[in-house]
Length: 337
Ligand code: NAI
Image (cartoon, rainbow, N blue to C red; front, side, top):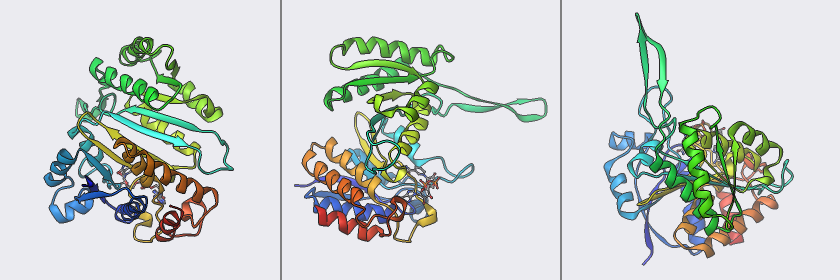
């Protein structure tokens, strides 16, 4: 019996790239029973809410979802559904691997996995305005919330990830020199947990600003990086830029009871419906899902097909420098499989 997986096509280019990814998975022999559910702006139109209960119920049951991008209105309107899903399922680890696929760029040897804490820090959602006199927005305050529980589980996840995936080093990126309590707790616990892995995984810490510079100048020195929510958010896009941009950047959101796999990019409304969206990042997200489910063989075959297509400029979409379409690129990947 194929495993049931929740499939959320999402908004903008989402339906096109999820359709493409489902075709490639099938061609690779990775059979699933897809439970397709709505979310995002498209769900507001059909279900009057951006995150219908049926979608939450489905993920609770299947415990695994492949998700297309979801549009979040800026400033006004509903809050990010991606953040809501992370909260609902306590998806505390955001795992973003980045490896050079497009050769001829500045670096040929980037192979970094960024592990970002996904639930706390400055993105914990505790913020407010402070009124002074007749100005209700005279000041604003956002709380950087860090708990020993949260820090412990993300750091352990990073070290365990390194062990399981044959990685040599964990770098903890922080700002403990200035934020002595919140970031100090992160760093102190990192050092403590690193001792348990001595001899198996090397450990170093880097101040976030220095880490950003070193990533740009010498990315080959990094292996696994672990960091709090906002720093991880920023660094992961920087790292995606080192390997050819968002078109090749996947992400996994992992919790104890559920995992959601996606592309890092958004719904790309500017190219929606034009059949030129690149499905590669979501496809790479799907390979993370296959690995999570113990299906390493089809994952490796898909990664090889993708690397080959990118290397040989085989019908690539315009964002990767080709003149292909979503459909022709997908067909090329299937031929290679
Ligand atoms: P975006 O990532 O959607 O687009 C940025 C640029 O990259 C655009 O020029 C777009 O055409 C291009 N692009 C993105 N993905 C592409 C692909 N697969 N193939 C070819 N070109 C691609 O970021 P933007 O425009 O800031 O956000 C649009 C919407 O997406 C917003 O509502 C935002 O909130 C949402 N979003 C959702 C995310 C998610 O669901 N995980 C992540 C990031 C943004």
